Length: 411
Image 1: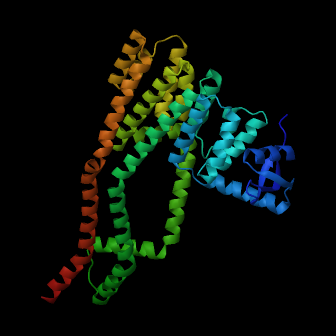
Image 2: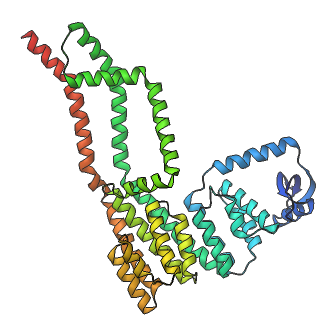
């Protein structure tokens, strides 16, 4: 049975005589003494922490769980761990060293907890699974494969490659959608200024002259009344709609429908498919080259796919492969996977170089994804111009048509 951790407060000195104070979770004072020795510190006092110190430590742990770890920090850690494991240095020593040297406080604390869990006899993948906000399901599953196969350093290198690809893709998408985001924010800001300062004055002016207002003006006045008098109700309705969507998305039947609609969204649906095909082929190729069994690869890949349509297709193909079918046949039968991928998979199965062929498939779809992302602004621009033009036209008609009517009346 694993020992319970206790929070100990300590005072220690370094080789220059400087004092160090802090707290450390451990099973016994001897473990704290050993840990201080690894840090190059000489223990002076080690005692069990008081209630206030325990409460402060728990608050810090809660804050760290909410804090985000940057992709760069996670990639660097994964590369470092792969190098140290490949050099034959004991895993527990690696984790303690990386926890102490980590530039990210949340990551360092998580690694210290993971080292403590392993020190008490826990498995590596189970220890990492204790921190889902930092280490994804894919990360944990691949560590599990590394434990079973005995190729942890190779799996960690592959994992770092995948993390780098995800980070680069995310940065490219952010850069490509920056202009539409700025334009959308400008529209919202302009609407808020109009509703707050401009429209109320025009309403007062039109009421004084008893004008018969045109439809666009009546619509703008209605929107102004809605935002001015019922903004709290609108906020509540928006929050309720979001919660309803989240609850509906948890239902498998509705999630399948919603995810199918996402794949049909112009431009973005095609980009999402290409990104997922490229990621699927890359992960499959890397894991296959690392000696992971075919069915285990499906379990890992299927467990991290966020779209229910793609996940369902992977489950269907896996079940048919488990019954003794080859890989290309079930992929072709579903009509979901692109012909290029099916042809390359079939060629790879026949030649015995499936991992190489899937790597080429991944290269192709990653290149296609980069091209789409690069031209994302160009593809969105017509829709953006249409929306902005419609907004400007509506505001112009709503404000200037009554003035035109007033001028006609004066004439």
